[in-house]
Length: 241
Ligand SMILES: [Zn+2]
Image (tube, rainbow, N blue to C red; front, top):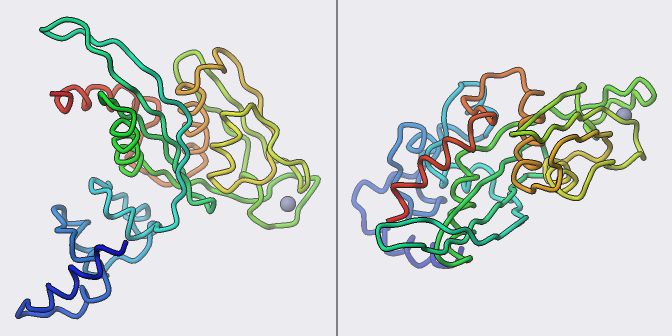
């Protein structure tokens, strides 16, 4: 964050000196309508974006509205890819990002170096953040706080499936390691889960979990986690040059 400070001083030379930009990093030149509204302070929360059914196309929007988003690299694997010159090794990173307060995402990135694959995965995740409706709907609990999910939900990715059920306070997250990380980052404290299929496949397990969580939200999000894997891989191809 420190490089922003020096840039900000330089930009004070600008003649128009619009005050709304003064407390925001000036490195970002928003390209989309939504980005411009976020940068100018017209939109100040992720909830506004989801209520309006808008699509986040610039990662800076997430940096601005969810600055304390945490990320966890769940997996970096090497894959072989065929090119005109023969086999090429590529690294694939799977990253989960969450606010621990109801926002969650998974991103996939591919690059020759692990480090680049991870940063691509983070960029990818920032474009697919979904809101999770947290609550307490366990009849055994009834405390009314946001420690669990609002209802039972199911999700799947390929042959991997998960069912997530509200649990009373103190139960903790009853899930396999991969699903547990996703649920924790979403901000869930107590939940029961049941998973089936290829649960050891990290990417499918994460996608299934996020798919289930995204279904809790009644709002139209513009993100379909059933299809997100296909979408991200087809988009990744032209970037691979
Ligand atoms: Zn409760």
